[in-house]
Length: 395
Image (cartoon, rainbow, N blue to C red; front, side, top):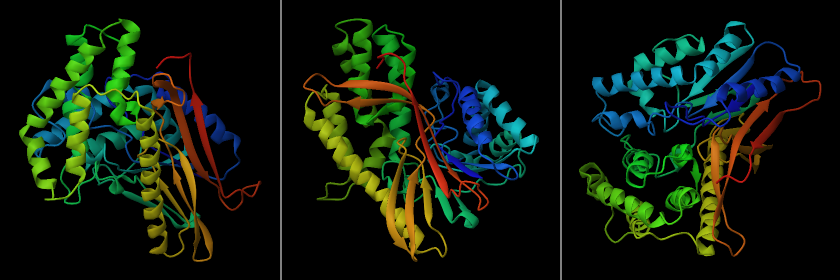
């Protein structure tokens, strides 16, 4: 039995509405109910750790987008240790299954844990916490399981915001460090509201709805603070655009007479700094269209991967935080299929179908994909599970 999950985004200080060890216990109950021979194989398809959006970066001068150095590697190991300590029950549960011979773990890197490439000590720390071998050896960015005709990789390489072809830090690292991570403490300090849900800011979908989400959240706590929230965001955006590293990124990635990613992001940030709320339904409709195009890019890359590989039939990605399955048509006479494993995080998803102001639904997601061995008594090739738990009407 081969299982895929992704995007747990473990980091110190993260709020767990449904603790990860409790999620794992529910997950393991379902796995045990399915007859299988030998240990279950669990593959993490990227972003098990979040080494980009950790608030610990704010305590010092290092940032995840800085050039690799021994100091940066040491900070990565420190944050990995802090994350494992914060999620100790979860890692204890995983390690106990590995040590009992019931579980085998595979781990491919995504964009939020890419810094493990430069931190061998951190890799050894993770393997020790999981009870697996190979110490400081590099983690792969891709996993292949020919016996199931499956290839798995995080998928962020089709996302220009989260991947840079020259291997440098992507724009998303800059946005996360200098905007997303800094926004909650800024709101607490300048607006005087301390709501634990502010720490969920990186789980807002779509990400450009962050200012609206924070405004709606703070308005629930104290009426009339929306203007203060907008002002705090505007100042952060101005500081972000004045950051020398950010300015250099925009300069290096701008093409003359082209409406490129650099130009689009500058325009989007400028609009958000003006306090533009997403009260126009056209924003929600535009997001649906853009996400559809984004999902298509993943599927097209998946098809290209299958075409260039003999004997493969299935591609598994993460990254988007939305679980999905998309048939790709015939590949070497077999029906190819692309899967996205979603997330095990809380998601605050914007919705606006009515004429009322936009609202956000918060839910704890847990999705996973299972490929079965040929001896499965039900004759299954795979099963794709998506679970959602929501409480009340919280945003």
